[in-house]
Structures are given as structure tokens and as C-alpha cells.
Amino acid sequence: MPRWGYFIALGITLHNLPEGIAIGATSEVSYHMGIMTALTIGLHNIAEGLCVAMPLCLANVRKSRVVLITTMTGMSTLLGTGLGMILGLISPLIIAFFLAFAAGAMIYISSDELIPKSHHSHSEYANVGIMLGFILALILS
Image (cartoon, rainbow, N blue to C red; front, side):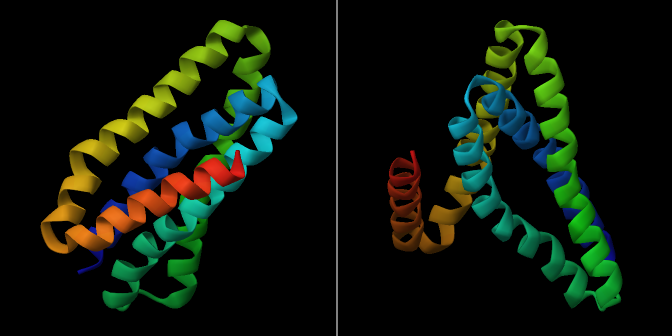
């Protein structure tokens, strides 16, 4: 049933907007910080793209439509980036607010949804994945 795929695409689209705002806001703080934020979020978005595409493919949605929907979900990151850059020019306080908002959204989703569900079925792999993610983030910064 393609409805779930469309629902996931909508959720990822809304999720990508604050990610884009974080990229735009950090690029207003420092070019290097903006590039690192974009790189880490870009790596993270590969898995998100698969999460959007897979249910649609399993529901036998046309491949061209799957590519279009998956691409459009990623485009909300660009929209958020532009918004973050524009609002970041107004005040450093706005940059701090948007970075805190994006971080809070990510922490909430991770701690309330992702980590408990990952430990329910594959606890050891989940722990290794979390640790590798932290190590990769430290290396990139």
C-alpha cells in the first residue's frame, strides 16, 4: 500500500526543513562549520532517502515517481538552508535559536523513537551504530 510510503515521505520532508535551517545557520557562523554540518547531514540523509524509497518501491510505485518523491523530500533541506541563511543574517540570537531548535528536534526523535526501537530488535548492532556515529562526528569536526 503506497500510503505508508507517502506518509514517510511527508515526515522526512518536514524533518529535513530544520536540518536545512541548521546548515544555513551554521554557515552564517563559519564557512567551515557550515560545510561540516552539510556533510554530516548529507551522510545521514542517504539513509533517509532509502527509508522514503523502499516502501514506495515495495508498493510497486513507478520508479520515476519514487525518484521524484525522494528527490523532493531532499529539496526541503535546501529550502531550510536558504531560510537559515536569510534568518541568520538578521541576528546571532536567531542563529542560536534555530540551532537549538534543530538540535532539540533531532535529540527528541532519536531518544524517543529511534534508539528505543533499534534496541528492541537489534540491541548490539544499535549500540555499535550509535558509537560509530559519534566517532564519525568527532572525526569530521
